Image (cartoon, rainbow, N blue to C red; front, side, top):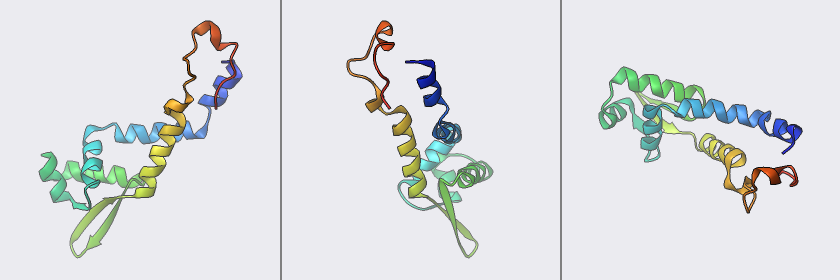
Length: 122
């Protein structure tokens, strides 16, 4: 792969967006919270109980997930219920597949000396 083709691949703004999202969800508690929210709307007390973490810690992680748009909050009286934002989760999945999907791997997988001879897949 030529340096120009490589530079085009790694300079996409989508890579930066995916990088930022992966940093956010790389925290194990945030990933667990997202898994819980796939089951439906939850309040902080549900999350702290099911994950065995403190209320302030659960609230902090929910705040981070809300800031990047993966989670939304709904107020009902004094309670606050959290849910996933399906469009944001779909965007994350699309970005991941677009950048790191197996469809980008040449078949058969080329040896190093063959890379210069083949056009790169986009």
